[in-house]
Image (cartoon, rainbow, N blue to C red):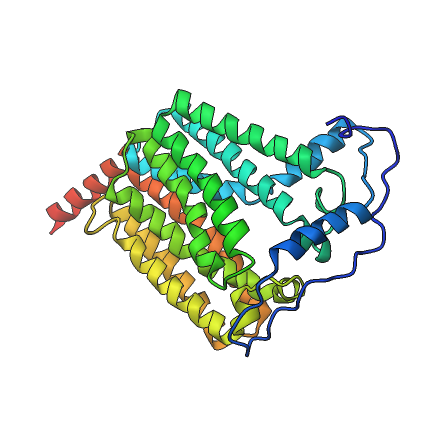
Length: 363
């Protein structure tokens, strides 16, 4: 790792490597292109040969590059599902130290998975203008160094959770890394239009980690929160995929909008949105894991989610509407989890009980 820091000037990548990948089939074609694994690795090697190794002018730039490898904008959304699950499991009385440890362990696990994803996808990242300047395709970080970094993050996550939370939480976090890397990144992403549907399980595992950290078990409520995040992932990500469909088509990634077209995609978005919103109510009844405050918040947020999804269904080719749905889906999940937290607090239960008693007396 001696190449992390050097006073050599930063050089830019050489001329782009010719794209040897097969194009993705058109939306009318029933079968997506399967990228040959040998050609994929061969292309990655060509990129490493043709891209100059870029050096850092300061230690701050080193930190910045490795920070970017972890895709930090994704992690907060994973952590808030962890926190929401923890608060429900602890009935509103979460140990602050356990919360800190669990969120830190989850951060390290997510950072490890994202770093390995960057290593694996460096060939396609090089071909897309919006990702070409990431640390791997730009040559600022070498694959060997990134892999060592990812392993260190994974070990740190497992150790932290196993020692200060429990073994179940540690194993779940580690399984999330393995699932994201092997099932989603390696297998599904380049070979199936259902990559996001099945791969969404990796993004839902943090909810299980949070519950396990508190109770050392997994109840039906924990699995329901997992299911909510799992079902929410397709409309969230497909809305984004509609916006950047051309990028995926260019590098041969068979995302649903590329292979099936916009209309088929928005129908799937509508279906998963309705199922997601419906599933959120099950925490209130029949599981009785949440209260009236949560269900009011869930139905209010869900109504807006369904409305925006319906608008997209009526305007499948409107990227502005797709963008609105994508951005709202982020707010939806964050506010839904915040609703779980607020509803679980003892003071909330007290206020609700007081209001119900007063209403009963007035009646």
